[in-house]
Length: 177
Image (cartoon, rainbow, N blue to C red; front, side):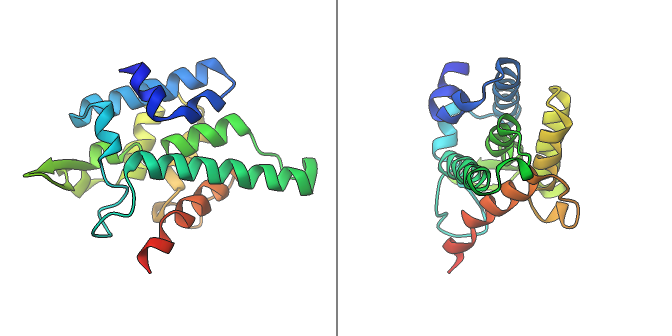
């Protein structure tokens, strides 16, 4: 399972700290198992249930958000230098994990993806943050997962959280048009 997760999310290799990378994989493994999914399912799960038909798969959206976030951080570093301190490993980990709670929020029913029982009670930023906390992810990463969507309005306190929030909406809002 771990090898397949790494194949589907090649940006994992961009996390330099091996222990952090391993924790991200462990969170994915647990989320897949608890949600009743296989890694391959991430390539067919929708990125959202709010747009029909969904504009992207879960894995496409996750990768795009992560890559947009890294590109934004690189642009900021090129222009601002050290005036904005961005932890790249935390940024990549948070980008990869920002929607991991959707693996608990969604279920498949009759060939259609719908909200699970948990998903009706608890949206993915909160369930994702709980997974991150449970696997010992740094608080900075858990914070981003918890605050990347509307649940975090007014709470985005780190550069990584601001970047992931905007990268997520950059990869969602245009598809609503």
